[in-house]
Length: 239
Image (cartoon, rainbow, N blue to C red; front, side):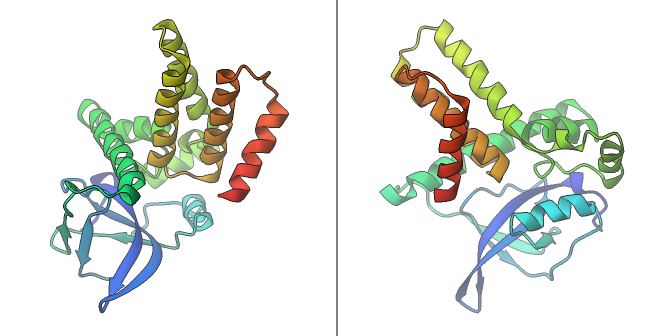
């Protein structure tokens, strides 16, 4: 039986194959934490759609806004995995490889609080860094955060991006790293973190704003918050 969401990791499934026909979808799949599933793996699933009552309505509404209307929990024996050969890399796969690497780093980092702390504190630390979808808290705990008015702490926003980029900027400057390499390095971390957290509109906006600010710093352009905000809004419209 499924007793707790903390026993599971999750992945977003974008493509389903039904009777050899490929179907585009947007499905969040939870699987036992003891299994290792990486980006671009193929899952063969034999089960029905199911969604235990772990999450409150606000989290389900958040998923709905992202276009995710179904949650699937898998138990041992209900799926098998096929890992594709990653030794041959084509140019069009570079972006997918970067996403795979970002998600793998996130999953690796999530193991540290799980080893160091007992639930629910391990899920809490993970939620503060990567958001509640990365390590779902129990419904009762989420309700406590809502009643105290700090439920926003469990949702990834621009504050995490600002802290990450600001810290890396200070470190790279103190080490004397040349401007071009500094911008490239921080950009990789910025985009990788955005991917790892799911690239919600709020985090995507913060990512774009940080990138624009970094370019302004590189070209010594006077910073104007209105210009940065307008450019990031234009970038979101293009995406």
